[in-house]
Image (cartoon, rainbow, N blue to C red; front, side):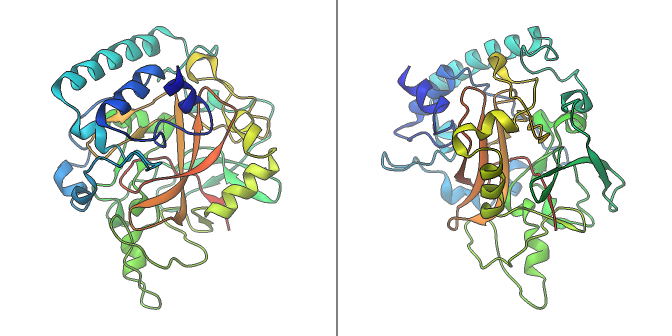
Length: 329
């Protein structure tokens, strides 16, 4: 119960105190976490290639750490792995048995348009790079995408190679929840490195001085929001203590943990991917990268869970796969 309350309160699954590999298993079980799926990458690259610099982070965090980088999942014993499979099996049964449209949990069969607030008058924008159309919404003085980014052109944007995924590596899932990106992909680290005026070598195991506005992988005229811009959004919708309910979509969240979606942000529980290739938390967690890093291995992200009204910007391992929402310049 204590571990469940940790997840359902201010802290999340990825920010629970890490005391050992088994601790992450217990938190996962207590919160009904989905151990997800491990599969080959949809772009043909190997896991070893895509996390080449994350090997140095494959250590168990000390008990004084407030970050669980996912490494304990990688280091769990075979018995823990069996338990994880059991948790995964029951979670998948819950997901597949729910309609997803009546507030009973997640279903991939519900189109993303049906997750939007029908009482909000959305605008739209077209990404000139690939022609995809996204709903947008004005909240206060900010204009946000009301859908998760689904940009994947690694020819135009080499930063994406081996660093973006559809949930469970199923291409059709991207049409519903958008893609999951590492932080290096989200900030478009290759473009930053080749900037003639202000080259910056950023990413996992690297810390740099980012420009004031980071376009990242967002369309022209839009950018990856930094921490203070996320804070502005949270303040506008009532502050951290109530923001989660206001920002979450009205359907799709586990155990009917749906939101009011009063402002039309329509945050979907798109889950995440950790650096061992497993996908977690579909129906239970929404994570959105910011352009702000905390050190060489961690960056800020907005964390929304299914069982609390508390929304907060935590810090997460840069190798995690999270969603991206873009903010208009």
